[in-house]
Length: 253
Image 1 (cartoon, rainbow, N blue to C red):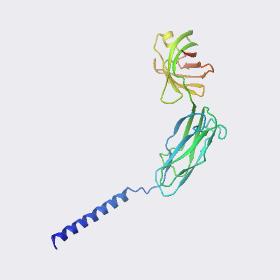
Image 2: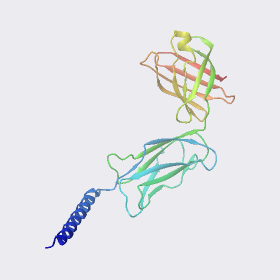
Image 3: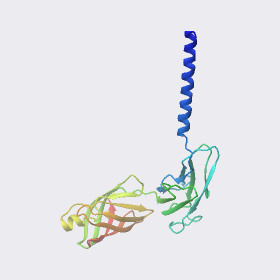
Image 4: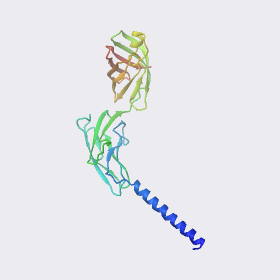
């Protein structure tokens, strides 16, 4: 056999071998297991606004991409939700479709009016895996702007009516704020300690102080509730497990 023919044969054999390896490797990578479905996340926070933009999408995902549409059912958990479907909010559909060639589908929630609410949506399917997230909680907040420097006047377990400067800053989520001193000066004026910061949620004019750690003395937590008043002041009633308590009125400087 001539040298030129040997070279041609060698190249042909190598090409066939490479094609065979690539084909086998690709086959080995194919997923042949069952299709599983899940919410992408277990919860989200949505700031409700007026107008057409007052909508929020909740995504579900599947672990396979196919050539046909797949449809899944969702339902509202009426016991865990604090809002009523059709009165406080609407869903665009009770089914979510994952289109052919895609791995994500979306259901859209629209609050009827901007108000604070919690909506729990359950995914109904026989295609769950151990890792599947079967429930999604949407916490709906209202647009809020409480940032600024305030003068707090507090009455409570130690002293009454002492003015104290408190700075309120907003975190990464609209409606969640850090108060530089949740005691309104009680720790400083009463105990000679330092400020006690804490996070407060403004849920459409309702202030929520929930299980915030005592960073000054440790081993304790602050809880409370209040309101954003029509004149722009804030009223917050708070307490801790040690026995400190008070009601603070914050007036913006």
